[in-house]
Amino acid sequence: MTTKRTLAIIAGIFGLAIAVVAVTFLTEPEAERTGAVRESAMLVQTTAAEMGTWQPRLRASGTVEPARDIMLRPRVSGSVQSVADAFTPGGRADEGEVLVRLDPADYENALAQRRSELQQARTNLELELGRQTVAREDLRLLSDSVRARNRSLVLREPQVNAARAQVASAEAAVDQARLALARTRVVAPFDAQILSRTANVGSQVGPGDGLARLVGVDRYWVVATVPQDRIPYLRFADDDPEQPSPAVIRNRTAWPASATREGTLRRLIGELEAPTRLARIVIEVDDPLAMDTATPNRPPLLLSSFVEVELLGRPVENAVRLTRDLVRNDDTVWVMEEGELRIRDVEIALRDAEYAYVTAGLADGDRIVTTDLATVVEGAPLRLASDGEGTS
Image (cartoon, rainbow, N blue to C red):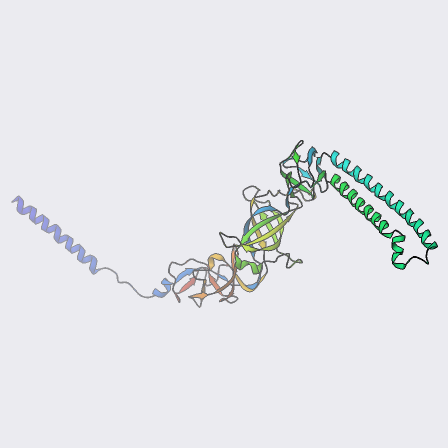
């Protein structure tokens, strides 16, 4: 009895389940196609293309280098007798300031000797001129008997010329001795900073020996690299001295965020950087150490620093300027036209750090789609986010 009752209950449960499934399928609503196109139109935002003339800002990076960099060397030999207080790493010297003095004793003696030789040569010349005067009087008495070709010998003209030559040689020797003595004082050839020195008081040096490394402080260079396609949009001072591209220099690792230095694009170096194949350019910065108190609060440039440079380039005419993210794959731009998506191939004259400058493929007033789309198909229906008007 119990088994039959259990089977009856199970059969009843299965029957009830089948009835519920049947009712569910029979009462399911059917999908409607009305308005399907409207519901599938993608919601987008657009911005209007604006044709005009734009001035790009081109970014580069480079290293600070000295515009003038020399090894200070003596031109005569001797022992270092004294050095200037500025003759130390980091010291600054004005043009013409004496940095090193060599022992002048030998050169003073040499100058005295040369002066003595000059005086002797002048005395010999005076004697010879006196003899010539006597010979001229004798010639007057013997004028009828002396042939013309012998007159110069009688007048001792060869001896006088030789005496004059000795005087000239002695004068040159004095000048040379005086110059050698002056060269015992080694001076700064320009306003300079001493980066390192290799000699001190008591050092014995000779011509060509290094004394110190000096760099000019009136200007530094920033040698930067840029892609080759940006060169036509740069204005170099060597080619366009009236309107070279100005440069803004930043050192994000060492300066405050608001700190900058200004420079001028000077020239293009006629050689590519070997590893990157980028073009090398020179930006010139005046007063790199910020010593001019008339313009305070400027950070100094340190040699070998890695800096960023922003250059104001030549204007790009008849172009549409777009943020770089609006240029899609294969240099295409999405345009909304009559409620549909159009994929335009465009020509880009230049890209800077923020914008792309389109010179073909877009017209003034075109609605550029700014929304990223999951499905990109030519002719796909679009609708604007705010009643058919662009958002920007």
